[in-house]
Length: 437
Image (cartoon, rainbow, N blue to C red):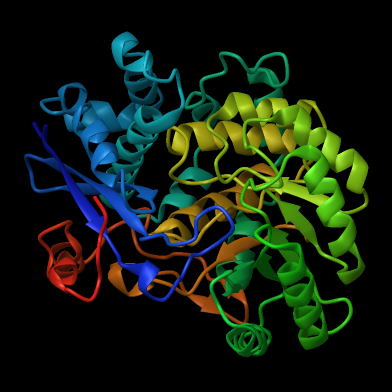
């Protein structure tokens, strides 16, 4: 009988602040990092999960994951993997750890890493990429994974079953089409605030040449800079080419409305995170005031309850789930079902460390089994750090190609982990990078 023998956690950090990769109005100098979890079994199996952070505090996130070891180590592996809905509810239901949330923040993200590692382990055992494993589950098996507590005023189990059953006819054809054509991507690579105008133009042209159907620019630090950069982007990309914007929670409501009035002439595709990610009513007020400019959020949406409220209140036009912010695969399935109920497109947040690798599975599952084909679905893409993963994303003609390897694409190369361990890895011993701790 195989058991869970170990939960290993590594503090992995990349010095992206050296080149200001990832810089935005709220996060000017991030060091992209991962609290990296390995769920190991007594028969040699392993599943991987991670939480993305931006440097300081990654050790706190690692400690939160380690705090879950008592719920995992020693359990019979086959039983755990056969009942991942119960496993998720068990981790979330620890009343003493739940007090630290509840169902939000560092502890909830830690639960997500462990749940995701269990799903990665199961997918590897079954020899399937995670998205395909999920897509081939029956509607009944999928809804059994979801915790409907706090959701039934917006989405009941029966409604979720109906959504999934509607998608059953033609599912095999959709899977084949996804495997042949992929899911369209947009890229944020040109848009970091720390980049010069020259680098912005060069990367915009490269994005268009690579076939991306949309790009995104960071905004929110200085209105004159934002107007200049959006003007440059519009002149470079031409009329009609979608250019989204991301304020990373920078504004109050009045500031957001006034700022966006000055950017509206450049025909932005959407404004992302214009205010606090927890402020449902502020998003609704901004959306009403700036229409028809669309509002997107979800990168730092703490749980399925916030997702429900954003949808109920008519606060958003685009929902951007994140693979490492909520309680893992199970809760993200709930969020996908909520978005389908309200007919709002899900365009997953990516970038960071491993987020592109992880979120692609949700988008492919959504397209195959939940919302079905949508012309307004994109997956965010950033060019950074994919070389550190065993199964990196594949982009062709501006589209994510369907993952084919077994698992959730979360596994990192041992050398990358070793070299970027904080603070003893070779990268962090380089005196050219000063780290404040």
